Image: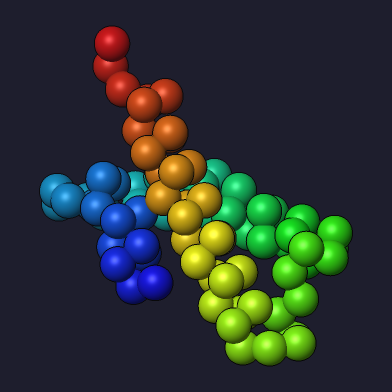
Length: 80
């Protein structure tokens, strides 16, 4: 899971950036990842309180969505 977090941080934090810039760049991907996690729990697909493996599955899915959203935001902001 730590490697997924580093994969999400990598595209946006590889050069010298300020904390304000990081906060601005990660706001939307983080909201998307949390929304997916909340939706999965609310719809009953994942019940993290039942077993620890469900919790780890939820965290892995949320981090994967964070990675995808971070990469997607990089494509959207790219200078074409």
